[in-house]
Length: 120
Image (cartoon, rainbow, N blue to C red; front, side):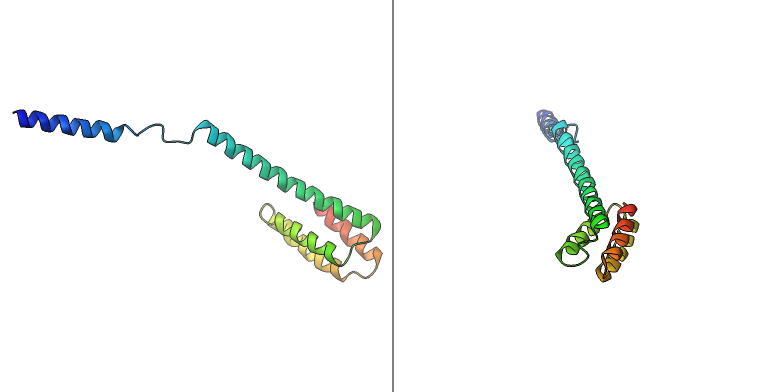
């Protein structure tokens, strides 16, 4: 009898100790808040880069300058950054960028850059 009682106590103790670590199981409010802030920052960064891209294209559309060289490399990377949020627009902008690279006159650069800015 005593042995049975001891066994029951040990089993009950083991059960309590194994359940002791169980809690809500979800992330705490600080983790949730940090994740929300990170998501907001990422959304703002993406919006900012799209605004910067449009600003640069608008400037090119006004001046007709910047149709070749390193300026276009920056445009390409900005456009690639849009692919995650809007792949169709990114594809259209990349096709326009290829035309812009081949543009010879300031008038061509202005027209293509204006078309690209309008897509944004």
